[in-house]
Image 1 (cartoon, helix red, strand yellow):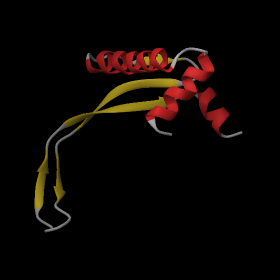
Image 2 (cartoon, rainbow, N blue to C red; image 1 turned 135 degrees about the vertical axis):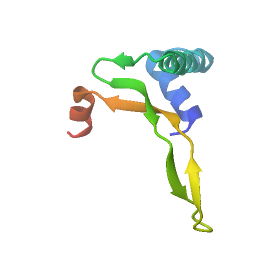
Image 3 (cartoon, rainbow, N blue to C red; image 1 turned 90 degrees about the vertical axis):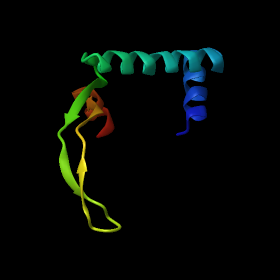
Image 4 (spheres, rainbow, N blue to C red; image 1 turned 180 degrees about the vertical axis):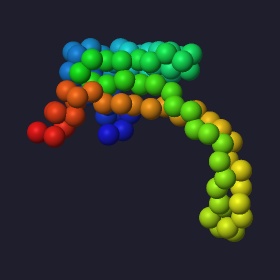
Length: 91
């Protein structure tokens, strides 16, 4: 599903204009990024939660040359689905 398809589906489901749906979806993502960046967890009961996970520095290999390279420590977004969502997906 593309961004445009998502916006259209949200607009149709909520009975609002595509512009309103896009602003709302963008605001949701902005809040998730802001809150998780500050160390908070964003949870939606029955759906799941967003949080930040830390990846330690490690050694990797350049696939083209095989040379060992150092990969810096980083942060990544993590989504954990709720039990209710897992149940719906496995019907």
